[in-house]
Length: 273
Picture (cartoon, rainbow, N blue to C red):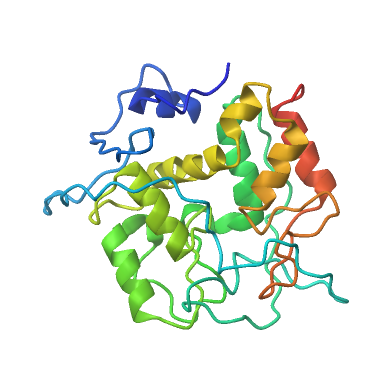
């Protein structure tokens, strides 16, 4: 059954990610912004701090997951750079990284028994965060955050970013870079004192899946191959059909899996997609 992201409820997001329908949800509040209908967030705020006032409404913007980049794919390079967690990105905050291989996470765990969306998020995370999961930090960050990301608020994460210019700051299971993190948290209506929990990260990643065409794909109006290519234009660790990252050679980026692995995982999730 297609995932209804247009009018998803907290219970709907919980079920989309494979939650127990009978299990109660943790306390949360939703503050969707004008201009975009988005599912409420499942996040929490620290009890000793009052939630921030609602952010101003923002329009739907074209996805910016990296620095301003030409529309055409970068030329092929003679050598294959290492896999990257969004290396060398955006807005003057990131510097090119030295060549350094990132350990692969190994074979994917069995996907049976979980929702299709949860399985897809795990497939993406295997290319982006590896074993570090929700507490992953870009390997090129010389100055690490003061605490595991899941124990930090958005305010604390942005303070770390501001205090450590000139290094990569991709963070979490889906390796959000600063411009993308700001955009998706605004869409979800999150205040600065929201904890960057696993539930919050999953809900933010759903915004990016929607950007890639998840609703159209599940409705049968977007081919699976095109949906996969759209995902590869969002996450640098995912390959295009030619096996290369859309950002291949750009500040050290390369695909962390082959197209056959990516396609095999997607086919396992949606056999008739």
